[in-house]
Length: 578
Image 1 (cartoon, one colour):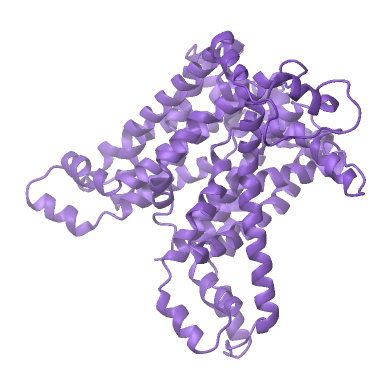
Image 2 (tube, rainbow, N blue to C red):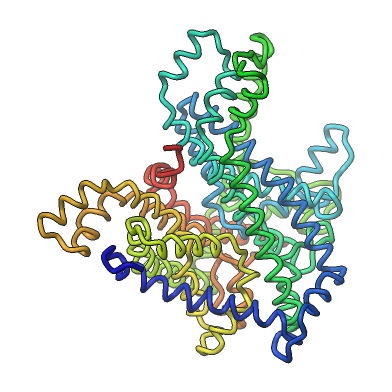
């Protein structure tokens, strides 16, 4: 790194942490993948051969690939449709509704899903009343579709923010000129909107792939470590190999998964950043003036899309409403309407959105008679608070240094960070465990905190924010005698504050919902955070379970609500085409 860039003091501390907890251990995993049992003598490609011949691995890999091919394109398309409608409606209420699922932890959502989609649950009751056949949602192809829907439900608002940034960056004059030329709504979308949002397209696609790996949280909480074979994915088999100490398989499988995901991101980059519209126009001999859909069908389709978006916005809020209603419903009433799910009742569960006998008893019992709630709550506060503070200490200066440095090494480091960002936790799980075990941190909160402090995702968010700092302002400050740290602290940070705050908010929402690391690194359940605990909805205790699930949401909902405007602006910095 060239010293004259003067950015290395900002980059090195964070880079050292990433090297210790991610890069070097990952390199060790690569070397171990060629050793017998991951630790013995050199055996060449034997571990890889064993993994490829493993039937469970082939099943998990096939399921993971199928989930990616189905869920990621579906999320991209649906979120784009929603973003376009929300942008035209200029409806903050609708936009806010789609963002609420971001703040609902997986364990809270699992409580709702188990009641809605149980064999005798509410949804099957509605299907039966409509004359349909009940569906077994947690087995076969139905459970695959359920978790695809869950993934879209959880992430649609996240992607929507990035699409909205790209839409707002397109000059309105272009649309007005197209209207004057007679271009219909869908013609404008396909010929103006999409070609001008290539960079947004790539960011949405990449983050959709990254977030699709986190569906393991809902799958684990609702179906355990050995779910239905339809949703048995790579995350499950890696966790199971880890528990059985099958290190040869684990290291080889981790390396193959890392290579595949890196290749997938490269393919997505080529697809998203290629100017397909220009290619298509040239193939047509330069004639791009075509009408995609006639006026009358276009209006009808627009109405149907508007109805879909509003309905989806209402559905996004319903799990939270469901938890609120359950929390303030009398225990006797809950036992009656949910008897078929939590007891020995016949028929199907029903629901009252307005409790017949409202009560605060469930809240009182949770807050005054459930000491384990506070243990889990303060565990979460400790983990999340220290992680966010650590990221502000290391990631903020690292993002500034990488954004402003013109060194070739800085670009290589940023590329390495992005590679680490797309890797699922299960790929780095063994390497982190080895390092943390050597530091005697396993079964302590530091085993979760330290690797997350040096996570590369916040750098990805803040990098674009720091790129917005005008070079002329920086040079003027240097001419006035300002040093590098003063420029960073008094100029760069205030200018990029929305990007920094949005990274902190996203970090809070992410780490308040953490599941994978506590399950692997914490043996003592008294050290678990709230996110890992799944309250049991049972007869006589349903009300307390609803209260636990609702109060698990409250901190993330408060943080999300306070920072909603900053999040909407900060997450989108740099996501639109230049």
